[in-house]
Image (cartoon, rainbow, N blue to C red; front, side, top):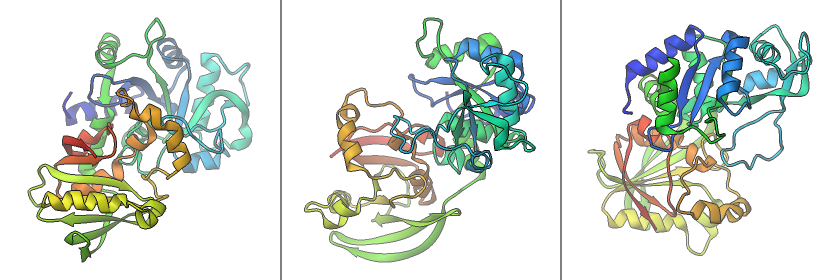
Length: 367
């Protein structure tokens, strides 16, 4: 499915009216789908429908400030799940529920998570609803279902608490691609993809802010450097531009997460390697994403070593945390006028939702 603004608007209107919406990961054949409804519009009937057609693990995405207000602490101290989904401790509403598992009980819980007059002491822990903390900036900073749910709430003018669960088939397998489309059609549900939401928001919002621009002399020739930051994060990121990229087409690009030890003190600096590759091609961009910022994966050599075999596998196109967090680099490239890239990478990458930013990967060079 190509981006269609009407599809997004229709989904937002349905969501505002209290309907369940189907959200797909992206526009490729391995799409997964989630059922999403605003918590304030959830009913026992809608909850029962969600439980019947999904994994039954019902989550409640919300902004960080809401999780903090309700004292919903992270489920684990260090999140090393494949998608770094930010689970908090599970909860049940304390008043008027029984075991917490019924559709009535779970509806009561999610509706009260969206109730500003309810506090942390009104919930028991653990429970049967799994709150999720969305990334600030929404799908523009992390192209996941968690962020899609909160963004839909905000776009519909509703309290930013969603209800979400992943579609599965009757045999327990995950519903994918055409199956998701068929399901939405059979049940008369509006369908939208994360890429759709990214493209819709990207038309209206730009989160990154250009700071200073200056000339820089690199070991491989002259370049132009541009600094970027986010409104809520003073960390500055750097785009180093070689040559003339004004046409924006098929630009060699390296999206490089900062690693001070290797970049500055390593025997063979990866930054030097990619600068040389780009300089040899006459033009290109290195987007240097600073460590620890929103949108940049935390450098952890031990974790990389543990995951090395899985990530290098031929089927390594699952939504790994590192691949999901493309928003920052994509917005910088967009600000530079880049529309298609020749990706320079150390391994195969699948950037979920990149199409929504209007950036096409023409080729991928693993080097």
